Image 1 (cartoon, helix red, strand yellow):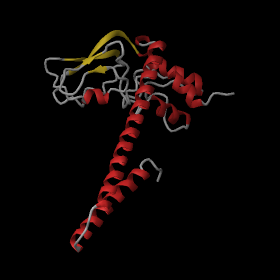
Image 2 (tube, helix red, strand yellow):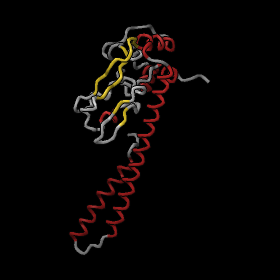
Image 3 (cartoon, one colour):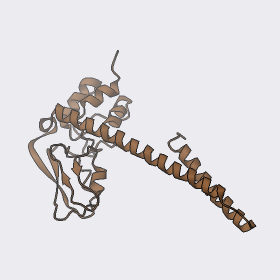
Image 4 (cartoon, one colour):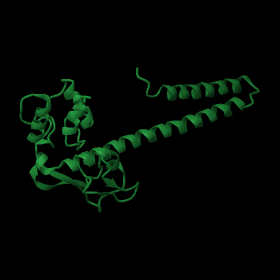
Amino acid sequence: MTKPLADILEDLLPQTQCTKCGYPACRPYAEAIAAGEADINQCPPGGIEGVRRLVSATGRTVIPINPVNGVERPRPVAVIDESLCIGCTLCIQACPVDAILGASKQMHTILPDLCTGCDLCVAPCPVDCIAMVPVTTTTGWDAWSQPEADAARARHDFRTARLARERLENDARLAAKAVQKMRDVTAETTNTPEELAEKERKRAIIAAALERARNKGTPT
């Protein structure tokens, strides 16, 4: 069975999940290349070697990295100034590969062996306590390896699945609370027109919330 082109292209990307290509992750970029909607020179972390790898699968011509997407550079690792960290968790939420440890109102720290150098944690930090520090003198794939790419991809996929599961679980909890609230409102005793009107108002609000929950995620 022939492997889909998008799968082949995804395997050739460095899996830093940095979004510099203009897509939210490496997989969407691979799909865009396969569909002819993106060029092969939009991945600075892969560098010119990454372009050559994509050429091998697409038959396109080697071209320089598009400066709009960034430049090929030594691989950096995020470093947190722990004396300034306020424990806001925004960097944790931004990290695509779960390379940051910490909790709300507690000091955070980077796991350097897991950091892909994506830069995504820098901008959200409200106290500018994160710096990107080069850890190699080589660039592109010479500063990275296939095992590191495979591990980063696995962590990204695990995180994506975990967040999706947590959203579903949260939606289920909210829906259950809404159902119970509807039961409570229905059971309320009404003696006056005003009380009846208020009861119907509450029922309408809860019914609308339940309908939104049922339609959540439904394609439009």
